[in-house]
Amino acid sequence: MVYPKLAIWLGVLVFLMGWSSHGIMGQQAEASTTGVARRCQRVCRRIQHKHLIRRCKRRWNCGPQYECRWIRYSHLDSDGNRRSYQKRQCAYVRRCSNVQVCRYLKWTLQCRNICTNSPEQPLAHLSEEQRHKLVNLKTCGLRGEELLLFQQVNLARLRHKRHPLRCLTKLINAARQWSQVQCFRGQLSHSRLRERLQKAGFHCKQYAENVAAGRNTAVQVFHRWMRSPHHRRHILHPKFTHFGGGLYLCSSSKYTHFWTQLFVKK
View 1: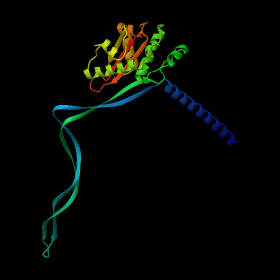
View 2: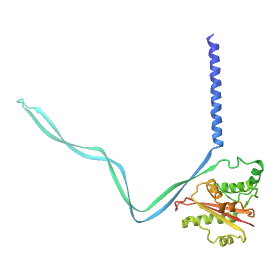
View 3: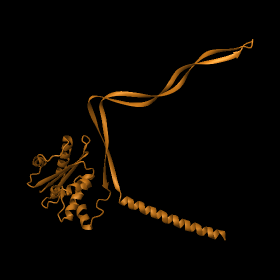
View 4: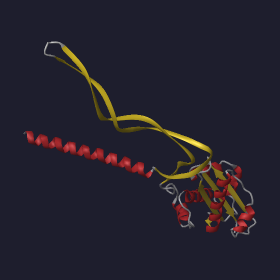
């Protein structure tokens, strides 16, 4: 009678283990669908100093050292008197010491990790009609956060009953170049916007530009623009037809991300 009871208890234990493992797997799947993908890029630059920079660090220096010591011996002579004498013994002994090593540098290398968070499924919460409109749009070589910013702009326009914008490669390259120029200057600017558009091949009368710096993700910079009435007007303008967005990762400024949006009516 012992064996049937043991089989019943083993069956119950196996059932409980399967139910608990199913629950754990379900939690992991839910976390993966709602998780955030984090991408990091290491950016380094060489800095030339006006004066020599002293850099010191401590390290262990180990090696053989020749050491000597005196050893005292004593013995009894033939008369019963105790006599003592000293003898010097030398040998190589391994010793370690913590020493400070310094050097003077003219150039130093400064590196930082620039990380961005982007949702794994940016179109997960859209309706079928909105998803169909956004998916069928061409990306024109947009990558990563730039593509996510383009999707955020068109999503906001669809919510406010505006037609989605189309991207242009020339406009995207112009936005990327201006983001790089702002990084080198270390400040935001809208200078010579019409000349820059004409140089890129756009001779249009209606155009606009949004710039930002310091926001690490496309979602953050887009929400910041939408809270500004001036930038919000550019994003939701009903007459604009084409869009160009550019991101530049800057290591020479405390604002590591420089963003540029260009809107034109073609």
